[in-house]
Image (cartoon, rainbow, N blue to C red; front, side, top):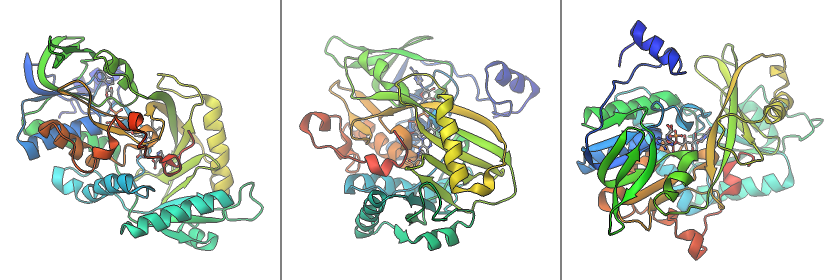
Length: 416
Ligand code: FAD
Ligand code: PYC
């Protein structure tokens, strides 16, 4: 990792942030035990756990752009595990526990900050839904508690709890162990730790299609830089999953949507926690640099564009001003978008596929950052042993055939 003048210029020409350190150029080998397509947190993390926990180090992680340049580097970093169903709560809380020691594990400060996530209720329906989540979580020993509007404001002083608001705050669910982390540090921490164990991380190497042998087994990946053979191929490309999986003959129940976020100019610490409101369509926290980090709902139309519609951000900013009138004169610095892939039950797909040797990790929709360490950990187990870990077994593709869905639409807490 270097910050030379040359590397800064190279980054600028490739459209990357000037301060993104340069990952060394790695030439692919002709054959790997496993190829992971997608150098986001989930793919890089899976490579790290493959090497560390399963001794599989002849691994390549391919990315069409730069590592962490997808949703991992574009999200609002909200981390929580307050999902409704036991299957989801199990997987997301596994992740939350791994977050708690991730900086030590990777020897890289991912700046995980458990400042609490407050989810606001504005309607009777919200109250019923969030209380149901609170009780379901408490039953599993996962922290989540119900606050009155006054208690919510005591936890987050800038919050407007006036009864005159268009959608007054009627209460809130608080997960105190929830919080935020530094997204690019997560990608770089996993990348560095995986590379130290022998994993090749190959940037600017888009996978074009997945090749199968005469028996139908995976044979490798056709990339923009030629064919790379592999015993196993694991696809972890967030919003870009369907075209690649279709090249192997696997159709997935996914829709891709732009989801966008924006940040304000930096100010002194003013937001002590994370606040989310699905009803007024906005969520907000403050980064360590001082910027207010604000996120929107998804666009209403499917698209592979990494930018969303302007009217969606306008609605979000209006929502934030209503919840926090004190922020109404702040200036916004920049906005951006990512592509999220959404399943019919709003839960991810992590597991084997009908093609021997081919695995998929997708469908995290608007909420996969929080799952990064847990998802990566169980995905590595699935790839190494060719069978799912107990925690991702329920998230098999087959559930869309059997009807055993895990309907987490409300827990997603982001309009989509
Ligand atoms: P990515 O980080 O997107 O990595 C996939 C990688 O695959 C990319 O680097 C991409 O370049 C690469 N790729 C794609 N196609 C190919 C190909 N053909 N060949 C090679 N490489 C390819 N989640 C939360 O939990 N909390 C939040 O607060 C939150 N906020 C969000 C806000 C926004 C604006 C967005 C867009 C998402 C948000 N999410 C949030 C969702 C979260 O970011 C994602 O679910 C998560 O980061 C997915 O990680 P990943 O590693 O699977 O995907
Ligand atoms: O899943 O908590 C979440 C989330 C917040 C913003 C986007 N996703």
